[in-house]
Amino acid sequence: MTATIPLDLALTVRRGTTSPGKAADIHDLSPADGTATLVYDRHLANPGTAVWLARVLLRQYGYAVREVILDGMSPGITALFREASRLRLDVHLGSGKGTPRVVTYDNSPAAYQVPAGWDLTDATDRLPAAHAAARPHVVRVLRAIDVEKENNVGRSDKALDVAAGMILETGDPDQVWDTLTRVLCETGSEREEVST
Image 1: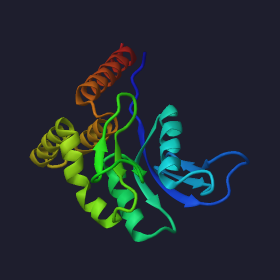
Image 2: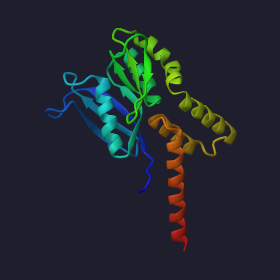
Image 3: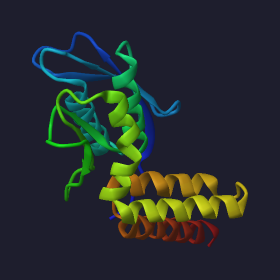
Image 4: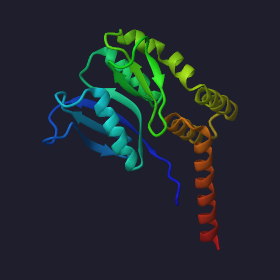
């Protein structure tokens, strides 16, 4: 089985008209630009559900959503989704009790649960601490990657950024390192075959 590294996309999300019976449609997918547009029917889905559906679909085709940009929505919800997406978190609005928190799942990306009626600016401010509390092993590895980037002065930034994105997406640093090692070994053996 060939290991794959997902291509990162920035996903612009808009309300609009979708295909009959569909909650959301992906348009303008441009791997070269690293962008895609998601149009969702607000009568069938909220932005959190629409983004979750898009992530699942895009993941099947080898893409990972690195940034969510809500178009035409209030600054509070736009900032919340953007910051959560940078940590590769889904956003569940109106769910959970108490304070906003990050929850993890076995076979799905982690999610940021924001209780109904919670101030979205405050929820955005609480996000880094909630993420660190729920995924301390991920945060430790990301800090180590940042230190490595500083020490290498740009020589391996792209590779380390890919690793960081995959770690945020999966929540499993060991699996990511195994995948990257496998990809590097496959690339190395392909080069040997070409040179012989």
